[in-house]
Length: 345
Ligand SMILES: [Zn+2]
Image (cartoon, rainbow, N blue to C red; front, top):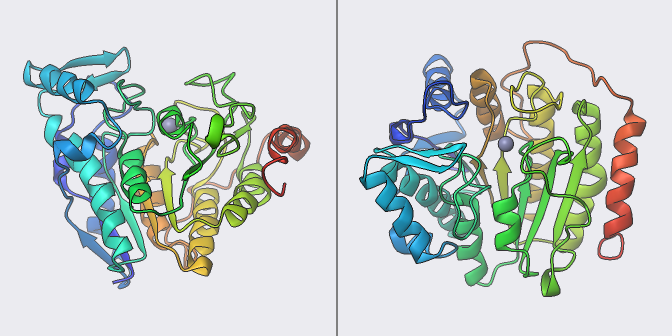
């Protein structure tokens, strides 16, 4: 089977306090949509896979892993004001990390070339020894590190509306993992960093590529950023494996951010990335990060499985970008100014 969706009820066990946007309802919406929709024949649905604690140590300090475990075993609690671990969060946290890792290693074996790991808790804000921004363990970074240790040139593209500070910092000093992120201007949004001048350090200089976008950016600007910055950098780097941090909170209805991308724009962005992986003949594994409109999480996730092939779902409304394209260009120009020394931009 070429394309695989990993999803399961275990991820509903990660509970968050009432009113928290990162709730089990996000994944329930996906599971419900799957019941109502006939998935294309080329998509196979598989059960999640559990990580070992040693897998977490690929990118996390042992003390931090034990600290999270202790909080959970003692009845749950907050890792930061936004990040809650419930008494039943240990299993889903291990399954979230394990599923992205397993999907990646199976892809490497040639079992499938595209996989979507619909997991929670999300991961891209989790640092080596710090849980933040709804994230306990950095699912994508764990997979990227496992692939790096097997000698692969890995690219992580993060299309969540927030900068994936956890992933960026874990690989800040290496040129063996390229991290590219499109996100809303961090002077207006959590985690309040992820500027173009933050481009890696030492050997890693130039291998963190931050592409902030102004609030109000819609499909037009988002796709321009993918085509003018993300794809040329990826092509020049020529990765052997592509990981995508798939956050759907760029959506125009998302309560946490102010971009205006539609389900159609998200499909188009993912299609560009998947299309590149296809033309390079390299595996691509996407992992769910944010996205807080539940029907968007459901539709864009299933759309991503059909990326570069067909669009299964359209947005409920046609939305036009509310800012002029010039404003997006102005932002992209700042990215080029910082990074043209390293990449053909
Ligand atoms: Zn996000």
